[in-house]
Amino acid sequence: MSIPQFSVKSPSNEIAEALDDAGCVVITGVTNANLRQSVKEELAPHMEKARVIEIEKEDPTQFYPGRTRRVAGLVARSPTITDQLVVHPLSKQCCETLLLPNGEFGYQLHITAALEVGPGARSQVLHREEDSFTFFPKPRPNLIVASMWAISDFRADNGATLLVPGSHKWPEDRIAKDEEIVQAEMPAGSVLFWMGGTLHGAGANTAQDWRYGVILTYSVGWVRQEENQYLNIPPKRLAELSPEIRQITGFDMYRGLGFYDPSVRR
Ligand SMILES: O=C(O)CCC(=O)C(=O)O
Image 1 (tube, rainbow, N blue to C red):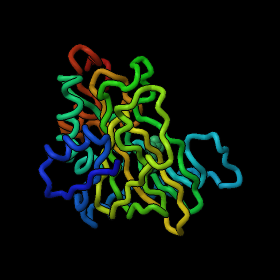
Image 2 (cartoon, helix red, strand yellow):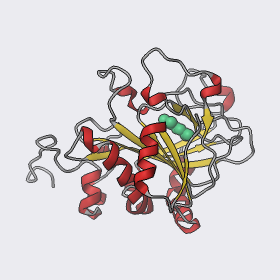
Image 3 (tube, rainbow, N blue to C red):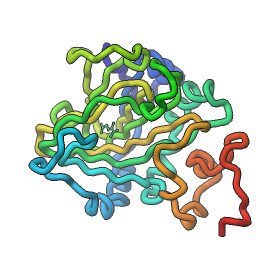
Image 4 (cartoon, helix red, strand yellow):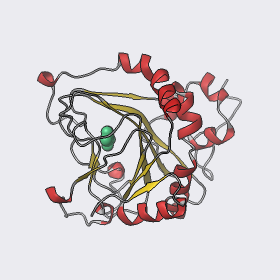
């Protein structure tokens, strides 16, 4: 099975249907060079400080491979990502189609991170975004939609994401064969969506350039978010957010979940 490919002009309901069916889709031509440059500039001071484990010192059992860099807390750190990617119409369409049936009162931002894969990095172990929700037997209900925004080109040799299309519908005991693993090669400006149940991981980088992506994942509004937005978004930044962003980052109630007393928080 391959990854269905679309352009930004394709009808978004067809994109969401293909995502449901194959568990992953690539859409090209979604962001322009100015937006990508703004993302890089806003995150550069944080990326420079991010710890990179040298290959010689890396532990092969670690989830994050050596020679990779990761910066979270993107709502606090990047206005461009917050305003233009977090609530992008394509993401909203995919979440509305695939998450709202399992949580009609809304969905929320689950993880934000900028991910760079450097020359020499090994591939990451294949995993599912929904692996924290062990309560549900596999295949689990749709709980998460994930996106990876290509800030650089994603090529087979520089660590483009590995995916196993269709694996979001697999039973517990099915293991991916090598020939079932494909790579999401896509030019800068594209976005890859995949389902929380789809096996995936960063590819190995055998090239000379760093692969740069921004991962934004979304979950149904009644589960705990993987990234703690209440700590990663300081009050000063929270006060700047639009009602829509505030809601999607999880600061509004989901029915009775998450109620608070405004007189306590100053
Ligand atoms: O970097 C990638 O392509 C995938 C990253 C990923 O799945 C993760 O870090 O959880």
